[in-house]
Length: 478
Image (cartoon, rainbow, N blue to C red; front, top):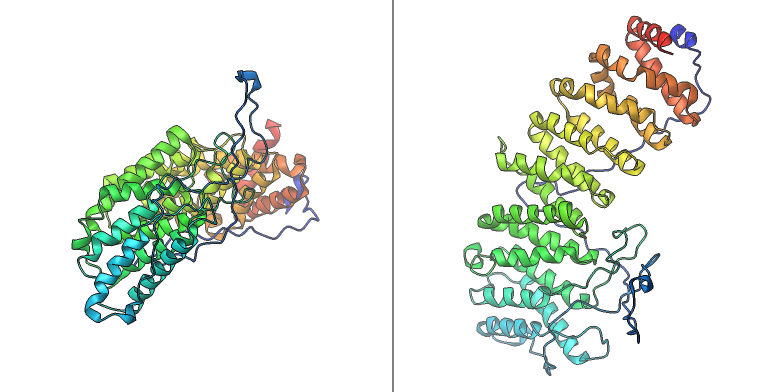
């Protein structure tokens, strides 16, 4: 304590012992069996109104950019609506002989391939009810019976799924404004969801069935099918993205011949997002799928997988909308480092290269992720990155945004990180001493004063002679 008193430091009366909890790693934590996703979240939708056409030609100065909340949506997806058909209810499966049930199942699939216009809630009510009933009956039939998936069902099931799901999704509700923020904006409801949800459930039950034969399904579930599925991930309806995540994950697990293609196709989505649009609604869901895929990578890692880490996952940190998918992204990065610790230096240097300069919210996210990385780092790898990393931490401690400084100082509450510091104190203490001392005096936030005092006291207890030396060297610099 003598050295602290010589510096004129005394412990602040403010009490700040609450360490922020790190968010749980998202993703699916299994390598062989693919997990069930949670029940899709209910949500409320927007309506879309088409403005009246102007009677005069607008000049550029007449075009006023939309600010604030965008107009509500009134449209569903762009379906190729089938011409009105009088769908007649088909008999229940229990009401027909056993040998006729496959034929009945296919007839119900044909009924379910008929599309209706959900923009008009009052149109074709009977047809919509008949279709919904057929979908539910088939779902129950597959759930309760075994050995009912015959070869003739495969093309009809895939065709029904494609008819209902592969469509033009509505354009973004606010194409020129900020990206969708789940905390501020209402999710966009798909008006046709009463039918689409059951179609997803039926297809998943079909793929997950013990009777499902991948060799037969390969003829119909191919690369084009995967590409069309990936296009739907840009849907603004979070319920649909949840089902898409599960569906693509099941296909990845079942179809070994499609795995490399699925990974490449997801990479292409990311490249388009990073370098061209910076707008996509399904990045978090795609990263959740990849978190599970990475967890199952065999060792040693292939060069293809290492390239994915450095050329896709690391550049994803530079996108402005990072907050929408950062937990899933950090989980993927940590999964890679748990697989191969030699990648740590490249990852940390990549994060430092993209470190935000003026966005304090992103800076806190980076600090969260770096702490997750340090929790799994090997001591030898820590020594390779400690100098550039603690230079950056020193700058964070000096930040006038108290949340950035506070988050950096919470590293001193992590026992494993403190142990790494202790083993490398002659290198680390000179890097951060001046920032700690300055902020013990001049930082405007009293909580920071208290945390700085604790960090300095910790260093002094570790190595009093080194602490005194840093104190002596610092005073002449002032």
